[in-house]
Image (cartoon, rainbow, N blue to C red; front, side, top):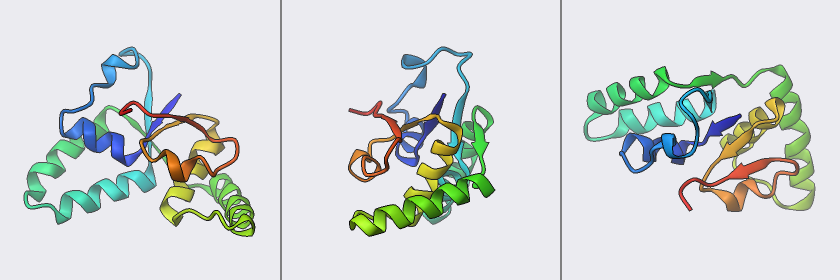
Length: 129
Protein backbone atom coordinates (compact mmCIF):
# COMPACT_ATOMS: atom_id res chain seq x y z
CA UNK A 1 0.00 0.00 0.00
CA UNK A 2 1.17 3.51 -0.79
CA UNK A 3 1.04 6.64 1.36
CA UNK A 4 1.39 9.87 -0.60
CA UNK A 5 3.55 12.53 1.01
CA UNK A 6 2.57 16.18 0.74
CA UNK A 7 4.92 16.87 -2.19
CA UNK A 8 3.24 14.21 -4.32
CA UNK A 9 -0.25 15.44 -3.38
CA UNK A 10 0.74 18.95 -4.46
CA UNK A 11 1.92 17.65 -7.83
CA UNK A 12 -1.38 15.79 -8.27
CA UNK A 13 -3.28 18.99 -7.46
CA UNK A 14 -1.16 20.91 -9.99
CA UNK A 15 -1.88 18.29 -12.67
CA UNK A 16 1.77 17.25 -12.92
CA UNK A 17 1.36 13.72 -11.56
CA UNK A 18 -1.18 11.13 -12.61
CA UNK A 19 -1.26 8.25 -10.14
CA UNK A 20 -3.03 6.13 -12.76
CA UNK A 21 0.41 5.80 -14.35
CA UNK A 22 1.65 4.09 -11.15
CA UNK A 23 -1.24 2.12 -9.65
CA UNK A 24 -4.42 0.46 -10.81
CA UNK A 25 -7.74 2.19 -10.22
CA UNK A 26 -8.58 -0.38 -7.54
CA UNK A 27 -5.37 0.17 -5.57
CA UNK A 28 -6.16 2.13 -2.41
CA UNK A 29 -4.04 5.23 -1.79
CA UNK A 30 -3.42 6.78 1.59
CA UNK A 31 -2.30 10.09 3.07
CA UNK A 32 -1.48 10.92 6.66
CA UNK A 33 -3.43 13.32 8.85
CA UNK A 34 -0.16 15.25 9.20
CA UNK A 35 0.12 15.63 5.42
CA UNK A 36 -3.51 16.70 5.17
CA UNK A 37 -2.82 19.42 7.74
CA UNK A 38 0.10 20.64 5.63
CA UNK A 39 -2.13 20.69 2.53
CA UNK A 40 -4.87 22.67 4.31
CA UNK A 41 -2.25 25.13 5.56
CA UNK A 42 -0.97 25.63 2.02
CA UNK A 43 -4.48 26.10 0.64
CA UNK A 44 -5.40 28.67 3.28
CA UNK A 45 -2.26 30.75 2.79
CA UNK A 46 -2.50 30.69 -1.01
CA UNK A 47 -3.64 33.57 -3.17
CA UNK A 48 -6.82 31.58 -4.07
CA UNK A 49 -7.79 29.68 -0.93
CA UNK A 50 -11.36 28.76 -1.97
CA UNK A 51 -10.15 27.32 -5.28
CA UNK A 52 -7.40 25.29 -3.60
CA UNK A 53 -9.71 24.08 -0.83
CA UNK A 54 -12.14 22.76 -3.45
CA UNK A 55 -9.32 20.96 -5.27
CA UNK A 56 -8.11 19.51 -1.99
CA UNK A 57 -11.59 18.24 -1.12
CA UNK A 58 -11.70 16.37 -4.44
CA UNK A 59 -8.28 14.82 -3.83
CA UNK A 60 -9.23 13.75 -0.32
CA UNK A 61 -12.36 11.98 -1.60
CA UNK A 62 -10.10 9.49 -3.39
CA UNK A 63 -7.75 8.59 -0.53
CA UNK A 64 -7.89 7.24 3.00
CA UNK A 65 -6.49 9.43 5.77
CA UNK A 66 -4.31 7.59 8.29
CA UNK A 67 -4.33 9.08 11.81
CA UNK A 68 -1.46 9.70 14.19
CA UNK A 69 -2.69 7.22 16.78
CA UNK A 70 -1.25 5.67 19.92
CA UNK A 71 0.83 3.06 18.07
CA UNK A 72 2.25 5.70 15.72
CA UNK A 73 3.07 7.83 18.79
CA UNK A 74 4.97 4.91 20.34
CA UNK A 75 6.97 4.45 17.14
CA UNK A 76 7.55 8.21 16.94
CA UNK A 77 9.02 8.35 20.45
CA UNK A 78 11.44 5.50 19.77
CA UNK A 79 12.47 6.90 16.37
CA UNK A 80 12.99 10.40 17.68
CA UNK A 81 15.21 9.16 20.50
CA UNK A 82 17.21 6.90 18.16
CA UNK A 83 17.69 9.58 15.50
CA UNK A 84 18.59 12.23 18.08
CA UNK A 85 21.22 9.92 19.59
CA UNK A 86 22.81 9.60 16.13
CA UNK A 87 22.53 13.34 15.40
CA UNK A 88 20.25 12.60 12.44
CA UNK A 89 16.95 14.06 13.66
CA UNK A 90 14.42 15.13 11.05
CA UNK A 91 11.56 17.61 11.44
CA UNK A 92 8.65 16.66 13.68
CA UNK A 93 6.01 16.54 10.89
CA UNK A 94 8.21 14.27 8.75
CA UNK A 95 8.94 12.05 11.73
CA UNK A 96 5.22 11.79 12.50
CA UNK A 97 4.51 10.90 8.86
CA UNK A 98 7.24 8.25 8.93
CA UNK A 99 5.83 6.83 12.18
CA UNK A 100 2.35 6.51 10.68
CA UNK A 101 3.72 4.77 7.58
CA UNK A 102 5.85 2.38 9.67
CA UNK A 103 2.88 1.62 11.91
CA UNK A 104 0.98 0.30 8.88
CA UNK A 105 4.05 -1.18 7.12
CA UNK A 106 3.20 0.76 3.96
CA UNK A 107 5.43 2.52 1.39
CA UNK A 108 5.92 6.28 1.63
CA UNK A 109 5.81 7.95 -1.78
CA UNK A 110 7.92 11.10 -1.40
CA UNK A 111 10.43 13.23 -3.24
CA UNK A 112 12.02 14.11 0.12
CA UNK A 113 14.34 11.13 0.08
CA UNK A 114 17.18 12.88 1.97
CA UNK A 115 15.29 13.18 5.25
CA UNK A 116 13.25 10.02 5.11
CA UNK A 117 16.23 7.76 4.29
CA UNK A 118 17.40 8.37 7.87
CA UNK A 119 14.43 6.42 9.22
CA UNK A 120 15.34 2.73 9.61
CA UNK A 121 12.91 0.30 8.03
CA UNK A 122 10.93 2.95 6.15
CA UNK A 123 10.12 1.84 2.60
CA UNK A 124 10.32 4.68 0.06
CA UNK A 125 9.38 5.37 -3.54
CA UNK A 126 9.64 8.58 -5.54
CA UNK A 127 7.14 8.94 -8.38
CA UNK A 128 8.54 12.37 -9.27
CA UNK A 129 12.11 11.22 -9.95
